Length: 359
Image 1 (cartoon, rainbow, N blue to C red):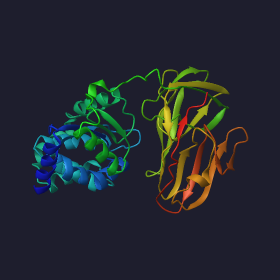
Image 2 (cartoon, rainbow, N blue to C red):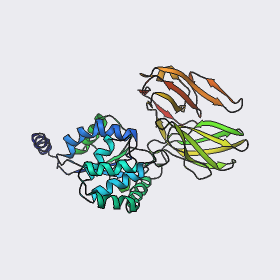
Image 3 (cartoon, rainbow, N blue to C red):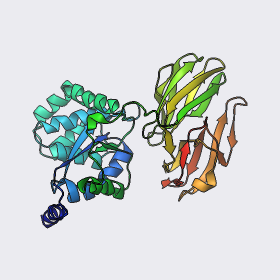
Image 4 (cartoon, rainbow, N blue to C red):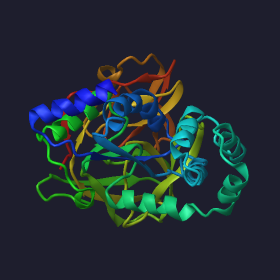
């Protein structure tokens, strides 16, 4: 309470009206980066801003079902808990037990936090909350959300589990009037014409091809505009599940997003053209113990410069479809996916550069 009084008093002295700032988090209960935000950053923001009434926090569902098979039902279960006034408690227990989110576990967590289990189980089994979760997802997608966690703070977008200082800096600027509060509905879903155009032709040979998607960050929107390939699914390697999951399609009109390496099996030699807009600011990549599949940056980069605190056991390796063999390379080239094996969980470096997309 003392902290809350001082925070409001500070704003009064500065002559700033303490109007709650909307803080929306689009999240997935099975997403490891969302769990990191919950564990490392959420408690600090809750104490400093949410509990003091300076910022109004709102959790939005954005389950990535192709990567996280339990995310949708976990989201539905949290809404069933909301019906009994315990959404926050259920939200917390899900993130604190993220490794076990099957149906039986969801029922057990309801009992653990003191929910009436009969109406909860009936709600969960009926699927009545799926439409509500889908509405959140559709809303986020319309605002440009493509991954989790994604945040809108006074309408200002932040992607990924960024350090607490990034959130604090933005919120304090809004509170003091240095950064305007943007209505969430005004967040652009198309790319400003002032951002450089991106166009890339990617060639495939018959058989399996390992390549990297163009990056989706900020205002970048990348879509397949030309396609001579037979439409088909792409597959991404999921580190934590140790399996391959469908991740988009090679088909005209499909979005190509994120920063992962993809497998695509071509029925013949073919090409796709990807077009979009934007500048990608190179970010560090989180690595899990064991094999990780990463994308080559959109400029040639020496892997040694990006190793950060990672102890690399093997790699980087990329698959050459023409010769059908694995090749070791210490240079990360554009449009290639690379396998890297690390001795423990670690973080690749984050060069402080802005990389314009190539012509």
